[in-house]
Length: 292
Ligand code: C2E
Ligand code: MG
Ligand code: MG
Ligand code: MG
Image (tube, rainbow, N blue to C red):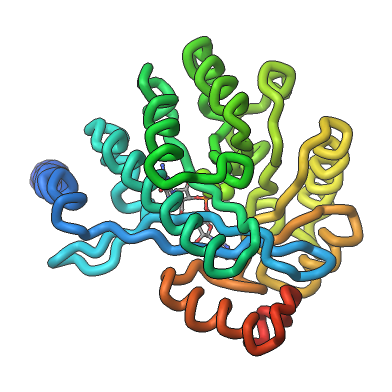
């Protein structure tokens, strides 16, 4: 009987594996045509000055409106896009869309609002990545000094010569580089000497521990000091409570990104609610954001 059960489990396992593969194949077919079918959207999460609560900029985050599956978060398709190479055209779409949006918002508000986009290692490994950036800047008359690329430490786990080279060229154009999810992917800090970073993003996993985990708190405080000493700015991600905000502010973290202030929002919502609020308040840029 045990044998039969074992056999049954094996068959079950095989079936679910097959389903996974089928599902991934369908999904990658869908992914292939998603740009042409206009199924991607960027949502934008404000990055807020910890002290004044002024919005300094936004991080662009991709969403996929799948015709059958509905709204898909990046965790559901970015890994697949990376495996299939589709991240290259998708990543280019992200850069161009975010830059066009930023240009429009800078004109609408008269403020030099920053825009940050996430990069995959695969994109930086393409020899012509710098051209993608250059063309986008030309096409949209972009503002490189307020455009930022978020990379993760995982790029330093691979052969970095080409990637570092491209990052340096991008920095020479005036763009900023942020390290996303700092301290979660790669433990050696020596990479910090190889590329001058402009911003360190403190991940939600550490922020979650504020108030009840001394180790998380120690890591955060050290990261803020490290950033200061390296001449980088620091921003904390996934800030959800006032307690977290106060701790971060008290220890010198400069910017905050998280649900405590704003969730990622559709462009239209930002224009209608945020920018109109600014107008009503005579262009005041500080606002009790979470109380809108
Ligand atoms: P990330 O770059 O670290 O982005 C932060 C994630 O945390 C976002 O999830 C954001 O919605 C979420 N978040 C922000 N504040 C809070 C908070 O207070 N509470 C909670 N629970 N979550 C918060 P999202 O949009 O699902 O993106 C997940 C990841 O997918 C991103 O992490 C990034 O690594 C990747 N990603 C997103 N857009 C792109 C893209 O255009 N290209 C690439 N290559 N990756 C992307
Ligand atoms: Mg990011
Ligand atoms: Mg992050
Ligand atoms: Mg990330």
